[in-house]
Length: 428
Image 1 (cartoon, helix red, strand yellow):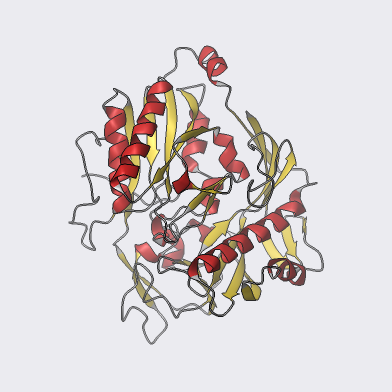
Image 2 (tube, rainbow, N blue to C red; image 1 turned 90 degrees about the horizontal axis):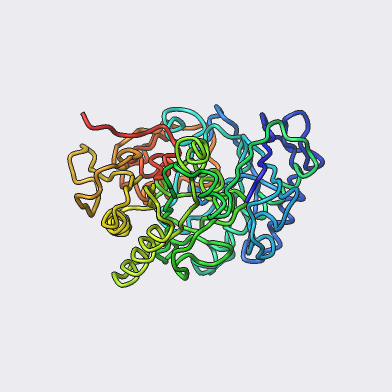
């Protein structure tokens, strides 16, 4: 499967009479976008705000972040099974608006939602402070149930990203990246002699607003399976969860998965990158055993020499992570795991809720319990009503001067478990 991903660089975002990209500026017809999103009668009010890098703006509580993309050529469309028909994606040509994103906020859905500061010390901990953000402020209809509220806001963000993405359909990309994975036998023949490597991606699927969707299907309903890596770039995997903001994989993270991009960069040179095995993170022990057994079986079936494993969330999913690591290592296949840590504010506590001697190659995104003071911003998009109750916040965290004291846990993407940031930890 071969995908040409066109990069169209966005240096600014502004409201305009028509939605279009001109000279690197994304112009947005605000009224047209609001009308599109308000088609969902679960939402009583929708507003659109803009937040640019360096501006004194705080966005909270953040639900999702999405990069606008559009299918230019090839089968299917962006976000298959949700915004387009259920067709296998990942081939042909896709254009992406790089340097901008859709961010969703509004009344809180679940307590594990986050903060994006566009300037100040908090901005250093989130990659989304570097983007030109179109922020959807979505308020639910009175009495709406949590799951319907989450779904309404999730779809609002996807609709907006799809709408903006179409502004790039007929544009010539500023840059084109080509990603290709051959069918298994053909790939083994071409890269004979190179170590065989795959990526095991654990998807958050604990339920109770902790959900991820694959081609529109809730990941807790799947058994581990194999994807071409390029499928994720066309939106085959989308976020629908409210895990702690620091280690939540937003839809933007899935579209720009750095593990996949880094493995592609060395594909055919240092090793043969065979593909992605997706697996879920369930609550009950029997489900964990089943999924980790299937994951290890697929790894063995592909005759792999090594795998990279990433998780999402912490606590209960730590067990899934260690199960996957242990069972794959028991088959004689080397593993590297990517996680983050909840080691206490002093960094002295056990970092993971589970452990095993086989987990001896670990990449960490940093300690989510580290405390930071976020200064007052000139403008808040969303609401400060929840900053003391979101995960990482606490009573008294919001000061009279408008500053906020929180753990990194509250900052969207701060200790991301795909390594999508610049924070890490090393043993000394």
